[in-house]
Length: 432
Image (cartoon, rainbow, N blue to C red; front, side, top):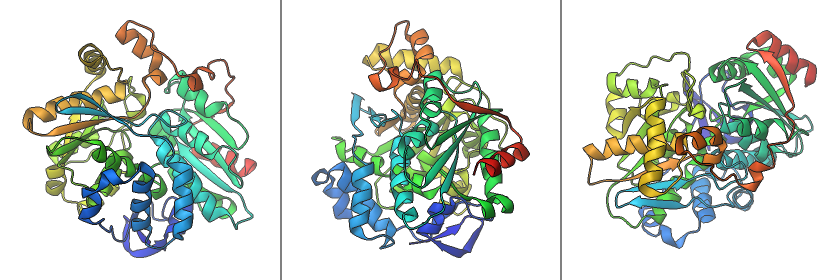
């Protein structure tokens, strides 16, 4: 398997280099040289495959021998060992629950797969690998859980102070051991900018083995394609299928595009955002205009400059006309989000978190245009991770799973820092 940078399609690297580096030197993003398609018979006979077997077939096909099949099998067995069930709401709407992993968020799929893959590539290296990751909410907890006590790997998580929920914060600040959290006085975009700048700094990269666990890393993206196929397997409908994706950094939607390119028959994708509507605006106007992020109650989507937009453009050869044929855009504010949470509960007796509620509202609008289609909303995190808002909206106390409840009384351990690259660089050099 060879990969190129979105900024230079003539220079190729191996899968190992792409995964361990995370980001190309030219500040692009790694993309596969070619995306092989799975045979039509595979999709026709999906019901004969377990979720892990689906993941194995996708990975083996993409890797093209970059890792021996027995090692791929082991990676999948250790990473994809919890379900992704589809819950039907009515005759043309369903929810894909992606929160059954250890951190109760969809990012568990990517984080666990990446931890296994990096551990495989890192097994013969004596120098520790330092993973940098910026989080707007769920990425940090998933990465912390996925890499916890992984030998030879240290993790530094940057998160915006006061802009993640209490339980999300506890998930990434209470583990210790090889996990260190930096509480940044700024936005998620500031955290992401610090991480990107670190990879472009020659003194840092020559002194420390750095990699990234954000969706800028191709190892995060690949496993997120698995559950699109798993969801399709569970459907009973013969209608054309659309996936409606609550979106922030757009790694999840990009993974859906990867699954589609590999042969999954998807009619459309719906890019659903909160007030940070840079991509929906692009789909309407053809103008991509990133801007500072706006805080909302769907905080994991508070991204004003989504990194994976480069990959989305790459899939479509930078053609706005082509992209808007496959992807529909939708955005809403916090008031509408609250109403969405309430409507789903009152209509279907289903607790959907604020991010999923945006997906639900987007799907409703999409089905007005395509009433003959079937839509699947990606529910990306357990609603109890946003308990304060959920309790207020639904006017009741929602249940908190035991693995989250135990975090309530744990003491957070963080290093507070300004959104200043000089301070961040010095801290890394002093500690690693």
